[in-house]
Length: 193
Image 1 (cartoon, rainbow, N blue to C red):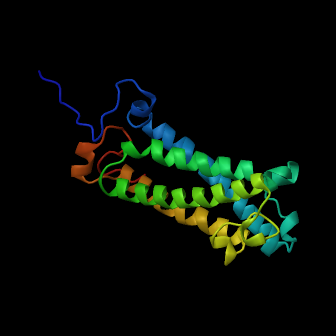
Image 2 (cartoon, rainbow, N blue to C red):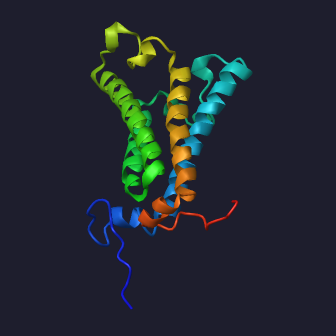
Image 3 (tube, rainbow, N blue to C red):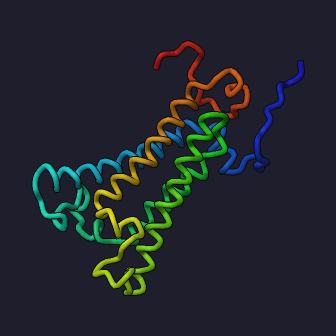
C-alpha cells in the first residue's frame, strides 16, 4: 500500500523547528501564541478601564503588570520586544495555514509589521534621545493624530481580529483546504466546537 504524499507549499527542512511548528505542533503553538496575545490585550484593556472607567490620569494607568513593575509601561524596549514577538509569531506560524485562513493570517501579519515599524520608531527615538518633531516623548507616526493609549488599543484590535478569523477558518477548512493542510488543527467534519 502506497503512502499518501503530503505536498508542502514551501520547502522546509525535515525535522526543523519551522516544520514542526507548522505541522505536528501547529495547534499547541497557535494556542500558546493566542494566550500571549490575549494576555497583552488584557493589559491594554485594563489600562483603558483605569483611564476611562476609574478616571485615573494616563501616567498612573499602567495596566495590571505595570502596577507591580511601573517601568514596564515606560520601557520602549519591552513594548518593542512584544511587537517583535508578535511579528515573529505571526511569521513563524504562517506556513501552517492554507486558503482563506492564510489570507486572514497574512493580513494580521501585514498589520503587525506596520505596528512593529511604529515601535521601532519609538525605540530609536528613546535610544537616541531625540524625539519626532521635537515632541517631549517618543512619538510614532500615527500618534501625531491619535493618543498613544487609544492607538495601541486600535493596533491590537486590528491585528487580533484577522488573527482570530484566520484561526476559526483554519479549524473549519473547506474540503479543498483540508486536503492541503499539513497539521491536525482542523476540527472533524460536522464538529460544533
